Image 1 (cartoon, rainbow, N blue to C red):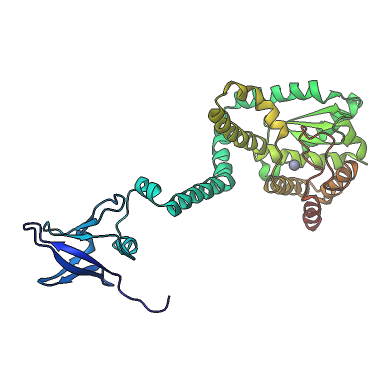
Image 2: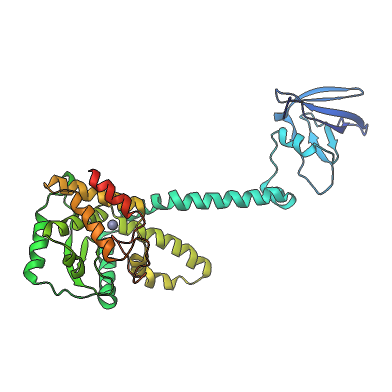
Amino acid sequence: MTGRTAPRIAGHYFDGRTSARREVTLTLDAFGVVHVEGPGVDRFEPVAGISVSEPLGGAPRLLTLPDGAYCEVAVQAGRDAFIAALGHSDSHVVLAQSRWPWAIGSAILLLVVIAVGYRFGLPWLAEKIAARIPASMVTTLSDQTLALLDKAAFDPSKLPEERRNRIAEKFRRLTPPGGLPVPHEVLFRASPRIGANALALPSGTIIVTDELVKLTENDDEILAVLTHELGHVHERHGLRLLVESSVVGFVLTWYIGDVSSLAASVPAALLQAKFSREHEAAADAYGASMLKGNGLSPALLASMLEKLEASHGSPGAAADDKSINDYLASHPATRERIEALRRQ
Ligand SMILES: [Zn+2]
Protein backbone atom coordinates (compact mmCIF):
# COMPACT_ATOMS: atom_id res chain seq x y z
CA MET A 1 0.00 0.00 0.00
CA THR A 2 1.39 3.35 -0.95
CA GLY A 3 -0.95 6.24 -0.26
CA ARG A 4 -4.13 6.39 1.67
CA THR A 5 -7.25 6.90 -0.43
CA ALA A 6 -10.58 7.42 1.25
CA PRO A 7 -12.85 4.39 0.78
CA ARG A 8 -15.58 5.29 -1.71
CA ILE A 9 -18.53 3.40 -3.19
CA ALA A 10 -21.58 4.20 -5.30
CA GLY A 11 -25.16 3.89 -4.08
CA HIS A 12 -28.69 5.15 -4.33
CA TYR A 13 -30.05 7.57 -1.78
CA PHE A 14 -33.66 7.53 -0.53
CA ASP A 15 -34.85 10.17 1.91
CA GLY A 16 -37.13 7.71 3.70
CA ARG A 17 -40.30 9.75 2.99
CA THR A 18 -40.59 9.77 -0.80
CA SER A 19 -39.69 7.22 -3.42
CA ALA A 20 -37.20 9.60 -5.04
CA ARG A 21 -34.02 7.69 -5.88
CA ARG A 22 -30.80 9.61 -6.29
CA GLU A 23 -27.42 8.42 -7.40
CA VAL A 24 -24.80 9.23 -4.78
CA THR A 25 -21.27 8.42 -3.82
CA LEU A 26 -20.41 7.51 -0.26
CA THR A 27 -16.98 8.50 0.97
CA LEU A 28 -15.56 7.58 4.37
CA ASP A 29 -13.08 10.11 5.67
CA ALA A 30 -10.28 9.58 8.13
CA PHE A 31 -12.41 10.92 11.00
CA GLY A 32 -15.08 8.25 10.69
CA VAL A 33 -17.58 10.44 8.87
CA VAL A 34 -19.41 9.29 5.75
CA HIS A 35 -20.00 11.92 3.11
CA VAL A 36 -23.11 11.14 1.03
CA GLU A 37 -22.99 13.25 -2.06
CA GLY A 38 -25.06 13.47 -5.25
CA PRO A 39 -27.63 15.66 -7.00
CA GLY A 40 -29.54 17.43 -4.22
CA VAL A 41 -27.80 15.39 -1.49
CA ASP A 42 -24.87 16.54 0.58
CA ARG A 43 -24.80 14.92 3.98
CA PHE A 44 -22.11 14.16 6.53
CA GLU A 45 -22.92 11.32 8.92
CA PRO A 46 -20.68 9.88 11.64
CA VAL A 47 -20.42 6.09 11.18
CA ALA A 48 -21.67 5.53 14.71
CA GLY A 49 -25.14 6.67 13.61
CA ILE A 50 -25.30 4.46 10.52
CA SER A 51 -26.82 1.01 10.71
CA VAL A 52 -26.05 -1.58 8.06
CA SER A 53 -28.40 -4.38 6.97
CA GLU A 54 -27.29 -7.99 7.14
CA PRO A 55 -25.94 -9.43 3.90
CA LEU A 56 -28.56 -11.46 2.03
CA GLY A 57 -27.03 -13.22 -0.94
CA GLY A 58 -26.62 -10.77 -3.81
CA ALA A 59 -29.15 -8.24 -2.47
CA PRO A 60 -28.09 -4.62 -1.97
CA ARG A 61 -26.98 -3.64 1.53
CA LEU A 62 -28.89 -0.82 3.19
CA LEU A 63 -27.02 1.86 5.11
CA THR A 64 -29.68 3.58 7.22
CA LEU A 65 -29.00 7.08 8.54
CA PRO A 66 -30.33 8.34 11.90
CA ASP A 67 -33.27 10.24 10.36
CA GLY A 68 -34.55 7.24 8.43
CA ALA A 69 -32.97 8.14 5.10
CA TYR A 70 -30.98 5.28 3.63
CA CYS A 71 -28.54 4.35 0.92
CA GLU A 72 -28.90 1.22 -1.14
CA VAL A 73 -25.52 -0.18 -2.06
CA ALA A 74 -25.47 -2.87 -4.73
CA VAL A 75 -22.74 -5.49 -5.07
CA GLN A 76 -19.61 -3.78 -6.38
CA ALA A 77 -15.89 -3.84 -5.99
CA GLY A 78 -14.86 -2.50 -2.62
CA ARG A 79 -18.29 -2.74 -1.02
CA ASP A 80 -17.35 -5.27 1.63
CA ALA A 81 -14.19 -3.36 2.44
CA PHE A 82 -16.17 -0.13 2.73
CA ILE A 83 -18.70 -1.72 5.10
CA ALA A 84 -15.91 -3.29 7.10
CA ALA A 85 -14.28 0.14 7.34
CA LEU A 86 -17.50 1.49 8.82
CA GLY A 87 -16.68 -0.71 11.76
CA HIS A 88 -19.81 -2.68 11.22
CA SER A 89 -19.29 -6.27 12.19
CA ASP A 90 -21.59 -8.80 10.64
CA SER A 91 -22.81 -11.55 12.92
CA HIS A 92 -20.34 -14.41 13.06
CA VAL A 93 -22.81 -16.94 11.79
CA VAL A 94 -23.54 -14.92 8.69
CA LEU A 95 -19.83 -14.46 8.10
CA ALA A 96 -19.14 -18.14 8.48
CA GLN A 97 -21.90 -18.97 6.03
CA SER A 98 -21.09 -16.44 3.42
CA ARG A 99 -17.34 -16.14 3.54
CA TRP A 100 -15.10 -19.15 3.52
CA PRO A 101 -11.92 -17.27 4.37
CA TRP A 102 -13.59 -16.20 7.59
CA ALA A 103 -14.69 -19.72 8.37
CA ILE A 104 -11.19 -21.05 7.77
CA GLY A 105 -9.72 -18.18 9.76
CA SER A 106 -12.08 -18.94 12.64
CA ALA A 107 -11.10 -22.61 12.57
CA ILE A 108 -7.41 -21.71 12.63
CA LEU A 109 -8.00 -19.27 15.46
CA LEU A 110 -9.84 -21.96 17.39
CA LEU A 111 -6.94 -24.38 16.90
CA VAL A 112 -4.50 -21.73 18.08
CA VAL A 113 -6.63 -21.09 21.16
CA ILE A 114 -6.72 -24.85 21.88
CA ALA A 115 -2.97 -25.21 21.33
CA VAL A 116 -2.12 -22.26 23.55
CA GLY A 117 -4.62 -23.48 26.12
CA TYR A 118 -3.05 -26.92 26.03
CA ARG A 119 0.47 -25.58 26.37
CA PHE A 120 -0.11 -22.89 28.99
CA GLY A 121 -3.71 -23.00 30.22
CA LEU A 122 -3.77 -26.71 31.00
CA PRO A 123 -0.66 -26.73 33.24
CA TRP A 124 -2.00 -23.64 34.98
CA LEU A 125 -5.40 -25.23 35.50
CA ALA A 126 -3.80 -28.51 36.58
CA GLU A 127 -1.77 -26.69 39.21
CA LYS A 128 -4.89 -25.02 40.60
CA ILE A 129 -6.86 -28.26 40.63
CA ALA A 130 -3.97 -30.32 42.03
CA ALA A 131 -3.66 -27.95 44.98
CA ARG A 132 -7.33 -28.56 45.83
CA ILE A 133 -7.48 -32.34 45.61
CA PRO A 134 -8.27 -33.65 49.10
CA ALA A 135 -5.42 -35.49 50.81
CA SER A 136 -7.57 -38.59 51.26
CA MET A 137 -8.09 -38.80 47.51
CA VAL A 138 -4.37 -38.32 46.89
CA THR A 139 -3.62 -41.20 49.27
CA THR A 140 -6.20 -43.47 47.64
CA LEU A 141 -4.88 -42.73 44.17
CA SER A 142 -1.31 -43.33 45.23
CA ASP A 143 -2.16 -46.57 47.03
CA GLN A 144 -3.99 -47.84 43.96
CA THR A 145 -1.03 -46.95 41.79
CA LEU A 146 1.39 -48.73 44.12
CA ALA A 147 -0.86 -51.80 44.15
CA LEU A 148 -0.87 -51.77 40.36
CA LEU A 149 2.90 -51.46 40.25
CA ASP A 150 3.37 -54.23 42.79
CA LYS A 151 1.25 -56.49 40.61
CA ALA A 152 2.74 -55.51 37.28
CA ALA A 153 6.33 -54.43 37.77
CA PHE A 154 7.66 -54.86 41.27
CA ASP A 155 8.87 -57.71 43.43
CA PRO A 156 9.68 -57.40 47.14
CA SER A 157 13.06 -55.83 47.75
CA LYS A 158 15.94 -58.20 48.32
CA LEU A 159 18.03 -55.59 50.12
CA PRO A 160 18.67 -56.30 53.80
CA GLU A 161 16.05 -54.60 55.92
CA GLU A 162 18.79 -52.94 57.95
CA ARG A 163 20.17 -51.25 54.82
CA ARG A 164 16.71 -50.06 53.74
CA ASN A 165 15.94 -48.63 57.16
CA ARG A 166 19.32 -46.91 57.34
CA ILE A 167 18.79 -45.14 54.01
CA ALA A 168 15.24 -44.07 54.90
CA GLU A 169 16.43 -42.84 58.29
CA LYS A 170 19.32 -40.85 56.79
CA PHE A 171 16.92 -39.23 54.36
CA ARG A 172 14.46 -38.39 57.15
CA ARG A 173 17.21 -36.54 58.97
CA LEU A 174 17.94 -34.20 56.04
CA THR A 175 16.53 -30.70 56.33
CA PRO A 176 14.29 -29.88 53.36
CA PRO A 177 14.68 -26.52 51.54
CA GLY A 178 13.20 -23.69 53.56
CA GLY A 179 12.87 -26.05 56.50
CA LEU A 180 9.43 -27.02 55.18
CA PRO A 181 8.87 -30.70 55.82
CA VAL A 182 7.30 -32.73 53.01
CA PRO A 183 5.52 -35.84 54.28
CA HIS A 184 7.03 -38.85 52.60
CA GLU A 185 7.83 -42.52 52.90
CA VAL A 186 10.69 -44.36 51.24
CA LEU A 187 9.98 -47.86 49.94
CA PHE A 188 12.27 -50.33 48.20
CA ARG A 189 11.27 -52.78 45.49
CA ALA A 190 13.12 -55.15 43.19
CA SER A 191 12.28 -54.68 39.55
CA PRO A 192 14.21 -56.54 36.90
CA ARG A 193 11.58 -55.27 34.47
CA ILE A 194 12.14 -51.55 34.88
CA GLY A 195 15.67 -51.68 36.17
CA ALA A 196 17.39 -48.88 38.05
CA ASN A 197 14.80 -46.25 38.80
CA ALA A 198 13.07 -44.19 41.41
CA LEU A 199 9.65 -42.67 41.37
CA ALA A 200 7.47 -40.59 43.58
CA LEU A 201 3.75 -41.03 44.03
CA PRO A 202 1.67 -37.92 44.79
CA SER A 203 1.10 -39.02 48.39
CA GLY A 204 4.84 -38.75 49.06
CA THR A 205 5.60 -42.43 48.71
CA ILE A 206 8.99 -42.65 47.02
CA ILE A 207 9.92 -46.00 45.53
CA VAL A 208 13.55 -46.88 44.87
CA THR A 209 14.45 -50.06 43.00
CA ASP A 210 17.11 -52.45 44.26
CA GLU A 211 18.68 -52.05 40.83
CA LEU A 212 19.19 -48.34 41.50
CA VAL A 213 20.72 -49.02 44.90
CA LYS A 214 23.14 -51.46 43.27
CA LEU A 215 24.37 -48.69 40.94
CA THR A 216 25.42 -46.51 43.84
CA GLU A 217 28.72 -46.42 45.66
CA ASN A 218 27.39 -44.91 48.85
CA ASP A 219 24.19 -43.86 50.57
CA ASP A 220 24.72 -40.20 49.67
CA GLU A 221 24.06 -41.02 46.02
CA ILE A 222 20.75 -42.61 46.96
CA LEU A 223 19.94 -39.57 49.09
CA ALA A 224 20.59 -37.39 46.03
CA VAL A 225 18.00 -39.33 44.02
CA LEU A 226 15.57 -39.11 46.93
CA THR A 227 15.91 -35.32 47.12
CA HIS A 228 15.02 -35.11 43.42
CA GLU A 229 11.97 -37.30 43.96
CA LEU A 230 10.95 -35.29 47.02
CA GLY A 231 11.10 -32.24 44.73
CA HIS A 232 8.44 -33.86 42.52
CA VAL A 233 6.29 -34.50 45.59
CA HIS A 234 6.78 -30.98 46.93
CA GLU A 235 5.86 -29.43 43.58
CA ARG A 236 2.91 -31.84 43.16
CA HIS A 237 4.19 -32.79 39.72
CA GLY A 238 2.53 -36.20 39.74
CA LEU A 239 -0.84 -34.77 40.61
CA ARG A 240 -0.53 -32.00 38.08
CA LEU A 241 0.35 -34.49 35.38
CA LEU A 242 -2.52 -36.69 36.44
CA VAL A 243 -4.96 -33.78 36.32
CA GLU A 244 -3.65 -32.76 32.90
CA SER A 245 -4.07 -36.20 31.42
CA SER A 246 -7.44 -36.56 33.14
CA VAL A 247 -8.70 -33.28 31.70
CA VAL A 248 -7.64 -34.37 28.23
CA GLY A 249 -8.93 -37.88 28.88
CA PHE A 250 -12.20 -36.54 30.21
CA VAL A 251 -12.75 -34.34 27.18
CA LEU A 252 -11.90 -37.23 24.86
CA THR A 253 -14.04 -39.82 26.62
CA TRP A 254 -16.88 -37.34 26.92
CA TYR A 255 -16.62 -36.78 23.18
CA ILE A 256 -16.41 -40.50 22.46
CA GLY A 257 -19.11 -41.14 25.04
CA ASP A 258 -17.56 -43.67 27.41
CA VAL A 259 -16.83 -41.93 30.69
CA SER A 260 -16.80 -45.11 32.76
CA SER A 261 -13.47 -46.24 31.30
CA LEU A 262 -11.83 -43.06 32.56
CA ALA A 263 -11.95 -43.91 36.26
CA ALA A 264 -10.25 -47.24 35.63
CA SER A 265 -7.47 -45.56 33.68
CA VAL A 266 -6.43 -43.09 36.38
CA PRO A 267 -3.66 -45.14 38.06
CA ALA A 268 -2.32 -46.17 34.66
CA ALA A 269 -2.26 -42.52 33.59
CA LEU A 270 0.05 -41.78 36.50
CA LEU A 271 2.51 -44.33 35.22
CA GLN A 272 2.33 -43.52 31.54
CA ALA A 273 2.73 -39.79 31.76
CA LYS A 274 6.19 -38.31 31.55
CA PHE A 275 7.29 -35.28 33.46
CA SER A 276 8.09 -32.26 31.39
CA ARG A 277 11.53 -30.68 31.15
CA GLU A 278 10.26 -27.94 33.43
CA HIS A 279 9.20 -30.45 36.06
CA GLU A 280 12.52 -32.28 35.91
CA ALA A 281 14.43 -29.01 36.17
CA ALA A 282 12.31 -27.94 39.16
CA ALA A 283 12.87 -31.29 40.90
CA ASP A 284 16.61 -31.04 40.18
CA ALA A 285 16.70 -27.52 41.63
CA TYR A 286 14.84 -28.68 44.72
CA GLY A 287 17.20 -31.64 45.08
CA ALA A 288 20.30 -29.50 44.60
CA SER A 289 19.09 -27.00 47.17
CA MET A 290 18.32 -29.77 49.66
CA LEU A 291 21.70 -31.42 49.10
CA LYS A 292 23.59 -28.15 49.56
CA GLY A 293 21.53 -27.30 52.64
CA ASN A 294 22.77 -30.52 54.21
CA GLY A 295 26.41 -30.20 53.23
CA LEU A 296 26.12 -32.56 50.27
CA SER A 297 27.10 -31.81 46.67
CA PRO A 298 24.52 -31.47 43.85
CA ALA A 299 27.14 -33.28 41.74
CA LEU A 300 25.93 -36.47 43.49
CA LEU A 301 22.66 -36.16 41.61
CA ALA A 302 24.50 -35.41 38.37
CA SER A 303 26.60 -38.55 38.66
CA MET A 304 23.50 -40.58 39.49
CA LEU A 305 21.82 -39.28 36.33
CA GLU A 306 24.85 -40.43 34.35
CA LYS A 307 24.77 -43.86 35.93
CA LEU A 308 21.04 -44.18 35.35
CA GLU A 309 21.40 -43.12 31.77
CA ALA A 310 24.19 -45.61 31.21
CA SER A 311 22.17 -48.38 32.84
CA HIS A 312 19.26 -47.73 30.48
CA GLY A 313 21.35 -47.69 27.33
CA SER A 314 22.34 -44.78 25.18
CA PRO A 315 20.33 -41.58 25.45
CA GLY A 316 17.24 -41.64 23.29
CA ALA A 317 17.21 -45.44 23.15
CA ALA A 318 13.77 -46.91 23.61
CA ALA A 319 12.95 -47.74 27.20
CA ASP A 320 12.45 -51.42 27.98
CA ASP A 321 8.87 -50.83 28.91
CA LYS A 322 7.14 -47.69 27.81
CA SER A 323 4.26 -48.19 30.22
CA ILE A 324 6.49 -47.57 33.20
CA ASN A 325 7.28 -43.97 33.86
CA ASP A 326 11.00 -43.55 33.58
CA TYR A 327 11.44 -40.71 35.99
CA LEU A 328 15.14 -40.23 35.91
CA ALA A 329 16.68 -41.94 32.93
CA SER A 330 16.24 -41.85 29.17
CA HIS A 331 15.13 -38.28 29.37
CA PRO A 332 16.04 -36.23 26.30
CA ALA A 333 17.38 -33.40 28.42
CA THR A 334 19.53 -35.55 30.72
CA ARG A 335 22.77 -34.06 29.39
CA GLU A 336 21.49 -30.56 30.02
CA ARG A 337 20.39 -31.48 33.52
CA ILE A 338 23.74 -33.02 34.41
CA GLU A 339 25.56 -29.89 33.31
CA ALA A 340 23.17 -27.64 35.23
CA LEU A 341 23.69 -29.69 38.41
CA ARG A 342 27.47 -29.62 38.01
CA ARG A 343 27.35 -25.82 37.80
CA GLN A 344 25.53 -25.51 41.15
ZN1 LIG B 1 12.30 -36.57 37.92
